[in-house]
Image (cartoon, rainbow, N blue to C red; front, side, top):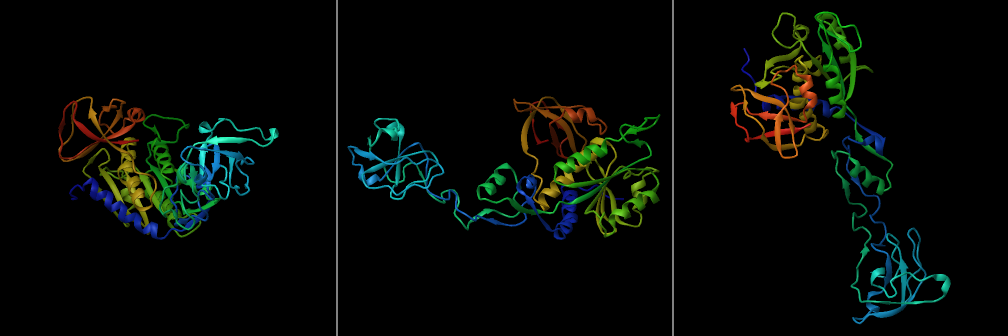
Length: 408
């Protein structure tokens, strides 16, 4: 008989199982926007400096700061410098009208904002030569130096970085159109059970619609996995074995991970346990509620995770084990944000079991429970925005007590 494994120990076992998958995966080159949410495969070094040239931070006048004494100076107005132009060098005794983002002319080392000029408007070039009175300015004022953001040849993004809008924007600013990301992992997701039918089919007495497939596939896609679904497997172990072997063999259809839901407890018709009788898979209790029964190992060399069949149990299993293991091994998805929140009600939890309740965290920093502890409460799960973590050594919590919550 297995002594219940701790949540932390089981999560570490999943990390160790998936580490072998990571070692065997390659990289792919994709357009920038297709990299959103994926992990960068290699270090990226800046092919150019940003900014690529010194430019103005303000609308104003580009000047030679040494030509303006403490009392100010009157300078002749040179040709204006619009953004996108390559300006002529600034001649001594001149100030060049310059727009925000425009290239600083050679010879200029500062910009005086238009608001500080007299007159405080740009002159009309069609009116002929004009002059402007400007106050003193320190060298470098309102000048964005070349490379002040990042210099050519320096590390822009490290391998493993999760690619979000800001990271993709940086690569675009560097002129890149593609990026190397880690090849997505393929997971076979199999729902089991004679009692389960696909949504849209006829619902006869004693049967239920499959929500697990949708719950887990959506979660897996959100986590960056490529999901393969083959429909529902009934309670015939030989049929389940044939299905799994089709995707475990080295072939075009082969997958990196197999995940099943249902059939992992100790009942008489636990199809997953029966099918795995000759495989290197352990079925063991984890000291967690819901989601205690778990399967973990390899099916003909392919990492295998067997989740319980109740909807909340299978989702909690994914959130507590597979998702954080992927974050640890692959770098994506980002870990769930962890917060501390105050309970809006009293709670009781079973001794020795890490309980995960579904809750809603409000703007006032309190969390109220959604539904009870039951693993079938899908409606309550849909209302929740957080998983409330209650450690196994805690049995009673009062209103106002702080708890850890994982934001969904």
